[in-house]
Amino acid sequence: MGFDFTYMIISDNDTITAISTPIGVGGISIIKVSGNNCLDLLKKIFSLKKNFESHKIYYGFILDDKKILDEVLVSVMIAPKSYTREDVIEINCHGGFICAQKILNLILKNNIRLAEPGEFTKRAYLNGRIDLSQAESVVDLINSKNNIVSDIAASGINGKLSNKINLYSNIILDILTNIEACIDFPDDVFVFDFHKKINRLLKNIEKLIKSYSIGKIINNGINLTIIGKSNVGKSSLMNKLCCEDVSIVTNISGTTRDVIKDNIVINGININIFDTAGIRKSDDLVEKIGIKKTQDCIRKSDLVLCVFDNSREFDNDDNKIIEFCKNKEKIHVLNKKDLENKFDHSKIDFDCLKISSYDDKDIDKIKKKIIDLIFGDKKNFFKHDSIILINARHLVCLEKSYENLKKSLDKNKEYELVSIDLKEAYNNLCEITGKNIDDKLLKNIFEKFCIGK
Image (cartoon, rainbow, N blue to C red; front, side):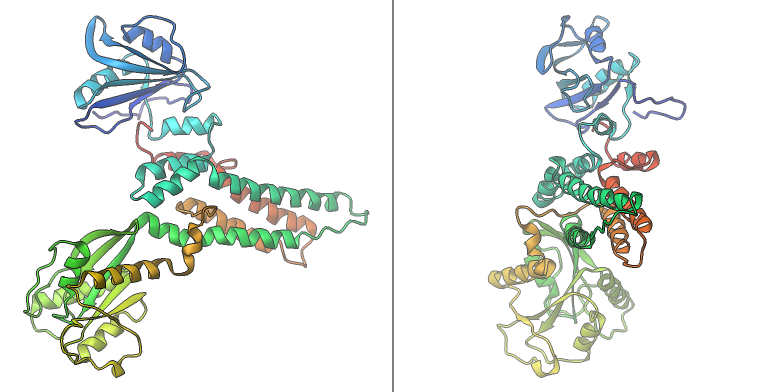
């Protein structure tokens, strides 16, 4: 069912409703209602007529006039002890599209409007129950693709990032207070050395900024491309990594002509794996197109698995492999270690991981190498008290604050100009928690939410 908001005047004081569970066959569906008219609505459409108490569940029937729509359980939460800090009711009806939609339509007929995307969480923010970074963590939790992102988002909802940002903001305010004193009382002998505090703050913010590189990988995963000349065992390696036959394997050169994609998870990290056409000289038009796709795939990859053949001599095609991925993060693999060695190591200046694509232990070694390369020296970010950024908006705010703090350290600046830099740095941090944010940006943030949250 579609709804047209074009001619609706939307107010934050309206009572709102939405189906909060996914559409489809299931045990239950939940319709949420929030606002001042919740309890009046309940008395109109619910078979049980009484003074409802907060945080209790009531059994009965939803009635359209005298017609029973469904047998339900209704949860009642009276302000301010609710998700939105408004009166909230949640109607638990039978699952499926029809039951929930019929009840929703009945609610809408009683001067309750359909919620905008994320409006329940937006009200929780506007009513002071959570700050903006906590609100954004809600959608991160909903969209999380692995346990690590889920844990990061849950810590965000609990205020781990907010507390750190508030701490840094208060440090800047404290410095500003002292600088303002220097400006207001210039005749007093009062020299305030704030540089140590700013430098310490810069280190802490820099650590947060650096954490985004790992947060982005955790959240989005990485693209891994397997490359090599024809018939080095790329497809066999692909199949073993994916634990299924996703690529055709034959002893005929040039079997793989298009890019084959699959997905695996290693240590909670999503890996998109691409098996590509072998790189070699070819007059076959289809194979040449496949090789061009291989080059495009390499360019878009975060990590490349360069495969060489232990049973064949190093040749010009191998040189091309090295050339194609010279500027990429890569793992060099020497496959077919169980066959007679003909590969001349003196022609390369890097180490190769010797494997057989049919050996499970060797496949595990590759997986470990992938994780080691992804995280490198970033493993300290996984300490219990560490914060990992996964939100690009937070990153931008922190980078702006960092630059303004650096500008404030200019020893040739008057206190008045230092004060301007610090106020900007403070405002940048406040944008993260929503203390200083414009309505347009706020609207953009909550438009990313689903309706019903």
